[in-house]
Length: 334
Image (cartoon, rainbow, N blue to C red; front, side, top):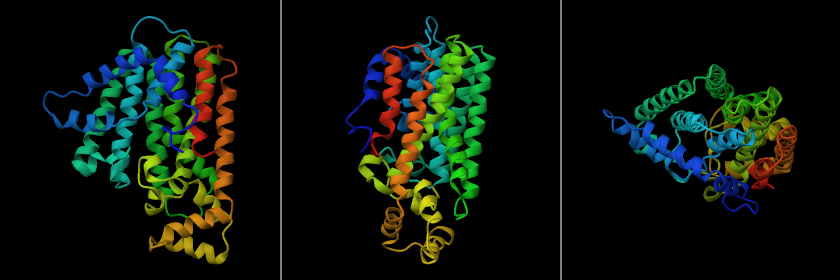
């Protein structure tokens, strides 16, 4: 089930509640992605930024700031735009690394333009994001978001270096997704609390919430790559298999594999010798060893952990929406 068709849609309630702030974020994004001398920059950025994404990460920053009583100024807008620029930059780079041709149901920028343009525009957006961070005048914010940027890159490199290695285990997988996905979720929520001048225990709670939410979100995405369909997930189903990425369901199936099954995984993942029907065979092996059910349980545990992290934070509508959001990111696999 996609985010669009899930029965419960707290993301829409959150978007409605934050509509005024998000309008300012979108205006700032359009303003800052402009380039007087290189029109390709706004062309490529607009293709991705305006592709219908949920803007979940910037909304987390706005929601966290509002939950902690932020008022006055536009630093929360700057930080929400910063988070979206970092996210967009990583998507541009990821599509080049993964040789992807589809993102959010549309052709990727590297397919429509070229790899060089995607990489360089991604670099430009990273630079813009750091300009926005500095404008808040907060060294703590700069520390959080710069560390997150480094952690994201580290997670991507770890994934690259462990790809096609059948000895990759769930502990390493967790390090990968905590880096490449959860780090930005965590930073997005944490800086919202920081810019609101919230207490250390509230900021820590927001950081822990974002971390667990990001892990649950990525686990759900990885399960959907094998158990979902292209229309629902906004990319080609089975991309992780074709790109020989070892994500959670594959890791679980390999850990339980017989000698014969391990030979299959060695052929399709390590050697890259993939044939017609291999994706379906991989899915069957995952089902046989309970990889989908076990993966769902893992994602649901992280979702519950995210909700628990909200405990110390002020009660109210935003608090409830963030709790519902933790359920929502895993609803599509339940």
